[in-house]
Image (cartoon, rainbow, N blue to C red; front, side, top):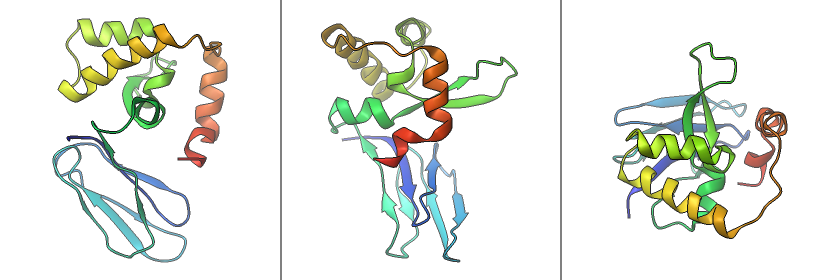
Length: 146
């Protein structure tokens, strides 16, 4: 069981991510407490206030959960070199194929990408338009029920 994504939700609803080893991230919550997360995909070190919620994703989680919450860093649609983090389920199939063909991602991410392509062959969902995906991401609607 390996870590795919290290995340934490604070009481005010903020989600912080530690994306790589020694990526020490903090957030001062509306309640006045400071929350921290560290370790990325290598280890988990976090604050112990007792009212935070770890949202760590592991390779052992069901794909239906992973595809919704695991994020991939990609350049945004304005092509201005800003990286935007997008849920795996919101990547186009051609984007996922390019990621795999170009050798990006660690073994865990690559396995998730292959599983996502398999998932899509089995699931015939109505595809949202690109504008609808970005609107949903901008509102944080998906993260509300995590």
